[in-house]
Image 1 (cartoon, helix red, strand yellow):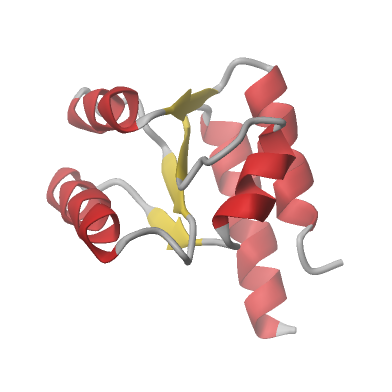
Image 2 (cartoon, helix red, strand yellow):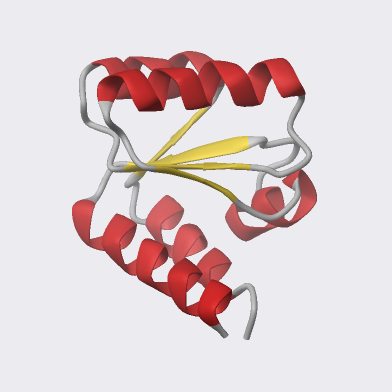
Length: 104
């Protein structure tokens, strides 16, 4: 299943292991609490650049995921263009699922 990682994102959100909203995400990146940032592929170019530059500077892994509708639906929230995963276990599993999808 192509988007099974979104189920894990939803689970992480319900477990309280996610960061939502630009300010909260940037704060968690700066404090190195962020383990993975998922950015919607249809996020605005400036938003993508801001997040990817911060992640690169602070050495936080990031991926460009599905569009904002699918990302938002996974968490039951509207209009989310990025979600930060703050749990190491969730982050590693999501990364491995995305790598498998890209290989297959």
